[in-house]
Length: 475
Image (cartoon, rainbow, N blue to C red; front, side, top):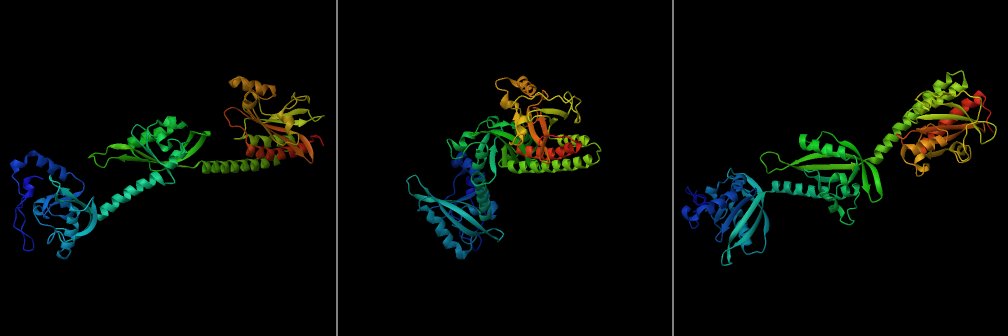
């Protein structure tokens, strides 16, 4: 603090003690070091004052002036707070506790009610510590203080940050401007495929490119982060589908994500520090919603198919209508094979066009059986095992790519683009009438158990139409 702030330029009031002149200094003797000290004190975010060994105020910065309203010129040189910054009845206690820090080890924390210059009272929290002279003896006390509500706000912010990065049910990642994780909480580490208590834990994720953690979907994630840095946080949440590499293998997950752009509060203009990324795994919820939507659509298709079949005079036409409605969103090809003489012989009755998409239609022929080899999935479906699922990926062996899949389909008398198959028996009135086969190309996923249940429901309706058409089948 420069000497100009160490001087008192007015006479004390009637209730104010005579300011001490013992600390007055010659500005020429203080030199630039004192100006530097004054600049540092005035630049502090905390209010600060200092007392000498006699309790006389020697320093008072601008933040202290903001909190209490007393300028440095009015405060420096006074002995204690009595009569101006604290009530007279409380002055001795406040002064004793402050000056007691001069002989106590470490910092002392207290809360006091001080007086503002306008007469109002403000509750402050102080941290005071003793100052030693060159000879090692107590030379005074410095005291940093702030309004209690501001301190509580700061503590809440710190507590919130610690809770987010330790106990939050959401995954929380602090991403730097280079889009690399800087801080990762336990839930985020778990969802990114790292056990937080494992070898290295969360620290193994820090500083690594997101592409090393996310196998698929990293482009969408990085695009969202770039947008936040450039434009700010979006208004709503975003659902991002990603594939994560975990210790158990690659897993497809859906993360409901929110983003916050972080800027430095100390800069005059907002300077981006990174992005706060909060996300939650909603994969099970999204899958349940998808299954519910699919179930509603399939029920609607069954209802429409039943109404269309009811208007068909020809039972065989009713059977193909049932299959046509079932194909929508379910499969690429459908085959209807009816049983001929002998349990291992099937005759093609209806099918979708092999060269291009089209409706299921009757197949013109002389009742020549389809050349299905023993163990063919369609023949297996006529046995007691129920619906049979098959796929080229499991049967093509060492043959590579599309050529191997085409050969697999050709061997089974199916269209060459077929990769996944589902065969289910056609039964009516205790008789096996044939087999209904659904086929999918490589751009669709393999058939699953819910698909087999749907196919069996369709097969029941098709079998009833075939029965009405006079297909004899087998007992």
